[in-house]
Image (cartoon, one colour):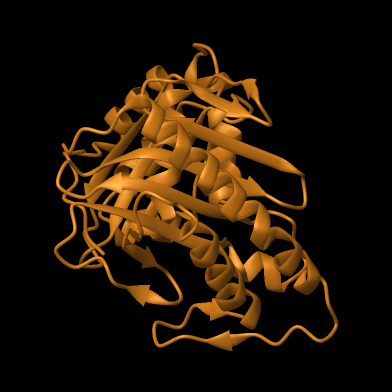
Length: 273
């Protein structure tokens, strides 16, 4: 890992916070707009002009770092970080599909990561509809709007709220039997809602989140926010999508118990674009 001083990381967190805040008005301008047009990318996922505009605004704000202009991996405007050890990672609207349908469960993700160490040094999750800003940097804990947050306390699995996709997604990932075991312990199952659920895990409202097929921009910020809130983020390489990740995150005890039931073989993740 390339060492950066605590003061330097704190400065980068301030820049990231300003960056996501600068994009929020543009994102909200498109939310529930009758003129919102939805396009499809090559992979079939939804995108709007507000995704691209928000990423452009974030990139511009990140360039205000007077000490260094760091390379960027962004979902919509590409990757200029080849060969770099440190980089910004941006998802301007995580949850474009719910955003395009008028559902409020979307947000903006920005992380600053050490590529070689495969870990973020800081992360920001902004939920503009809820006016909630989640921040974390290495060794400093996690906060929501400046207040310290913690993951859920120890609960029996039958009392845990688990955010998870549909059963067929588990089957595709080779975890159908594990999904049946998880349902069998009586956990309270809710559907996924992108980074909103990650934030809810960090603040302890949801115990565990299970996701499949995540890109680096989907998980880098959430990983450090959840772990700095006292939780765990278990990752493995996706079994169905090259270069992507599956994740189990939330309270440390809950995430480990759910991973064991699923036989989710986590490993240190090699950072991919």
